[in-house]
Image (tube, rainbow, N blue to C red):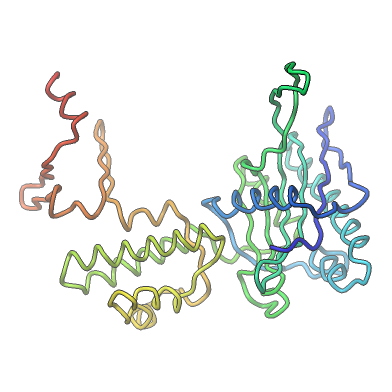
Length: 332
């Protein structure tokens, strides 16, 4: 990863409204700063529910126009400071209008990973803690909490410049706190949503389930679902999206090579790169269910072995009861 520009501004929590406190210049890149950004990116990549979209406000003073001006400028450090400070002010205004009273630090990072250039824009908070000084005394301290992220957005600059009409070069988190707060980034950045990680996961799971129904062997069906799940998790861990061609190629290594053809002959909108929600993908590899007073969950690989379903009698038969559960049952 190469950091081109990085800066941290502040939204100070006043008595009634958030007050923007812009930094005077970009930070000098250092190994410590690279570690901080890496931690932030890992947090962002692991967030389960992202929305994807594209710029829709193309006015002269809009976010994408200011971003384009910065990218084309010769004095990038100066223009990056100005570009991010203006965005900071607008973010503060929209958060105040939304009734948000919690401030924090606003990090902007222009960085490159491989051949792809990104802009990350996120709101982070600080936490209080204690430390031991060189004099072996206890002192209060504060630290930037990179593991928590209430608002964040990332622009794939490379994809945006190659194809401005594409619908997935921009992603952002949907914060908790009401519909008004969830639209803050869309208003500040001037973008419209095109899809969500939950929708993409639901579509992928539906396609995989239908595809597996055409496989006569239950073991093979379970294997394919596990392969899809593991591959998706690996890509998401790396912060990368996946395409139908990549997924089909991965499945081809172990046998099935017609998943893409199957999807293309059905009404599944899965041509664009996907970043499916992790939690929704779990249903590929685990069976779960609950009713009043009862909750069950087990790995799909156990069905037909340790767990058997008797459909005629509406019974689930479990052998090899977990030891701890067995002890509780024996004491009942």
